Length: 102
Image 1 (tube, one colour):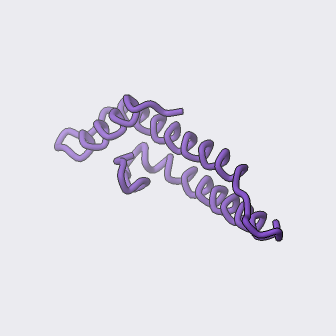
Image 2 (cartoon, helix red, strand yellow; image 1 turned 60 degrees about the vertical axis):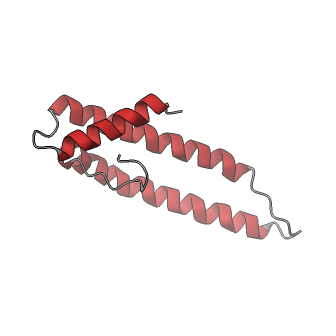
């Protein structure tokens, strides 16, 4: 689980990357690691939540369909982020979350 301190550091690095000096190579590595930790934390929390999804209907195929669709979306996101992780470390791309600058 990612801490508030780590989230604050993610935002700090984002803002520093947008300033004139940018980030050092070490800071870019730290930023990439923190972003990955944040994404992994969100996915883990979502996975726990998905296990608890229950459908009010007797037809459980609907909840199974929902879980399958979300799982596919998570896999697609993983594939996209694998490519982004490489470029994010180099470019400081912040557009992963609307409320966090990661």
